Image (cartoon, rainbow, N blue to C red):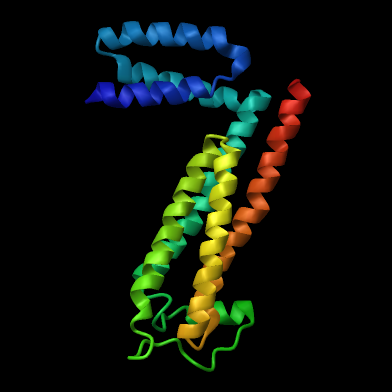
Length: 210
């Protein structure tokens, strides 16, 4: 079991070393093979990971990697968790206790509550599925950002924006209060503000190295 954990941990450690430390990374990998044969692979891998992450802020590639992880773990995944929590708590088809605060913050009218009734109950399954797909897309987007796969990240952003627009339009038809689309729109805003800036920073770093 420890072998299956040690290998990805070691891979993560080597990924944080940077291209200018390739010889050091190769030596670490060779020592890891020896430690793994001796049964100490997991502890050695975690030691290498600690060393690699301590080195990250000291070189340009490491700082870019840290920025990607901060964007994914500090922005994208929390927004996905917020959407999932909202869906779990009944959002956006019943009146949750925080709906008034959200609407007040967004300066949206709250005179009518988006409750479920016979006329719009049929839309719940489709909207819930669409929101779950949106959450899954955010998780994939976080992975692509960490991997610096900007082409796929851009495609996922466009798909997410299309899903949010669709969710907004159908919610406007099905419910009388658009409070339910504030969080998905927030997700789109986070994506389109943070990821292009991060991508531009990467491109500038690549140009400087060239």
